[in-house]
Structure formats: C-alpha cells, structure tokens
Length: 90
Image 1 (tube, helix red, strand yellow):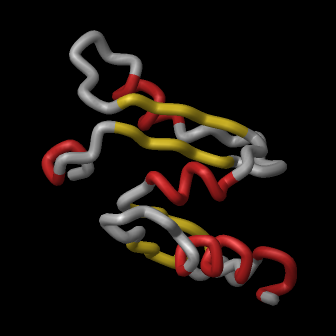
Image 2: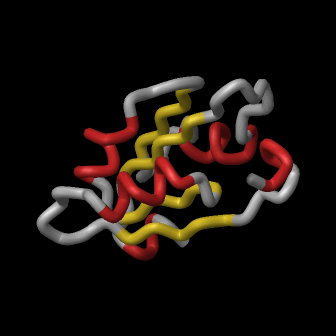
C-alpha cells in the first residue's frame, strides 16, 4: 500500500519496545525491495517529521505538535492511533 502510493522510505521509532516489525523487515530486506526501512529505538523526530509526507503515531501531544509545526512545504499528514494502554491513556 505504501509503495503503491509513492512512498519510498519508512522509519520506525520503537522507544523502549523490544518487538521489531518482523514482516516489514522481511519485505524491506527482499532483493527487489522498493522501500527503504530504518528502525531506531530513539531518534530526534523533528528533522524527520519536517521531511515526511506522512507520520503515523500514537496520540502523544509531542508528536502531534511536531506534525502541526512541520516546515515541510508539501505539508505533513499525521494519522494518530490511540493506544489506551500507553502511560495510563494520558
């Protein structure tokens, strides 16, 4: 779906999580992979968001504000996914 819509790069931030998205890793490492994959535990998000066309995130205020303040001239679309088990659904 991402490739079909013109996306060429996918960056994951796992935070403290230890589970890596295995199926995504397999697809990205395939010999004919058409999407570049990066997986990090912690990264500075602002420069990445400023270049991103799409950000899929939890509903944390920080990442939502970063998307609203994005300097990407094309704009940065944010899809916020509720995770009610994260930090007591703050």
